[in-house]
Length: 236
Ligand code: NAD
Image (cartoon, rainbow, N blue to C red; front, top):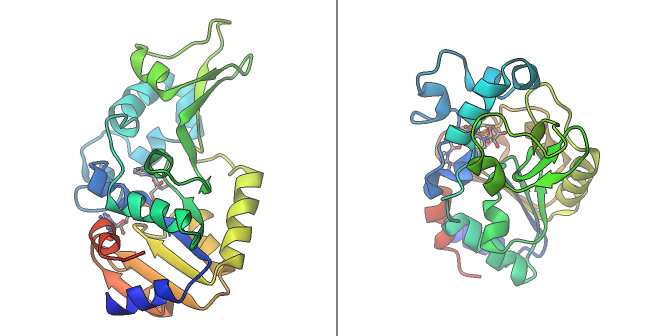
């Protein structure tokens, strides 16, 4: 913890790269932990249910799963989200790059957030382009349709879809400019997102994760623990 504080004190351009583990302390399960979605009993895997093919071929089942597991509108930012917003406000953090789709970084006050996998808070009619909020999707029953009759799709990147080009460019530029990269709450197994840490060329590479990851051996500092608990102890 002392080393982490020293690194943060010595940094001016921190970038935070996070995954589902950043939101588990807000009560949202991740995918691959012991109590994650992959260990819960479903007849089809979450990876299949969150694929583009499944969205179009099993639209009703998709929305049942999506509303049940991917739309945590009740969730509040935890200590990790809040500390990152504080670091940005103090001018020490360039950006948050997240694989999460829950919008909790923005809810905590973060401004520069690159959402690699999109957001549940943006939803678009595939026919006329009309926009809908997450609350509207949650409130509807069954498959959500626009007034024009078109199917509404959440702007989340499903398995089998490409990442948004501008978001990727923004995230890569921020990571390449960072003096410190904090990677946290991610198993680093979902590509291409996991490969983004390779653009880091700064001074300190820090990893905060509950379980070991493939990046541990390359880091300047590795902390195995809860990211909210750890970041809450940092003085800005
Ligand atoms: P993952 O489930 O593959 O891995 C999560 C990692 O976080 C694990 O290694 C686990 O040890 C660690 N972890 C869990 N809780 C932690 C905590 N409190 N502190 C520190 N580490 C913790 O998640 P991933 O690598 O992000 O990949 C899963 C994909 O599914 C991503 O695209 C992700 O965004 C998406 N997803 C998003 C949400 C969300 O938006 N909240 C939830 C589930 C999955």
